[in-house]
Amino acid sequence: MMMGGPGPGAGAGRYSLNVSINVQNIFNHVNLGRPEGNITSTNFGQSLGLAGSFGGFGGFGGPGGGGGAGNRRVTLSARFNF
Image 1 (cartoon, rainbow, N blue to C red):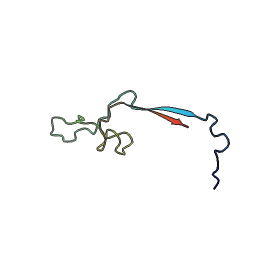
Image 2: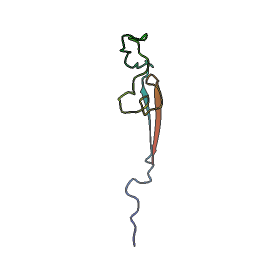
Image 3: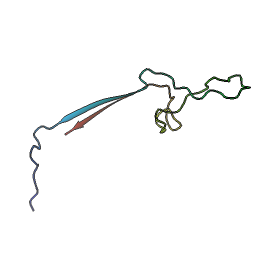
Image 4: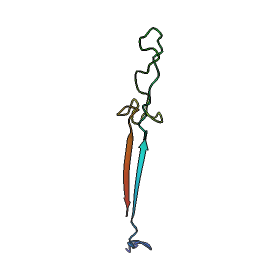
């Protein structure tokens, strides 16, 4: 049984490196939640917490996320293809 060898260009040094950076909330502005709506409360009109995550899909900062919505997040990734 004969097996096929590498195709044209295989082994010719075709390597690539992809590097990317993703930044969310680069200026670190706090994303405040809704203000208190009870008029008899001493905190009326004040926001007592942070809003959900960016995009609203439960990523970071939301109910299923791991941090506050006001946090800056920087993600660096690299991919090496050979």
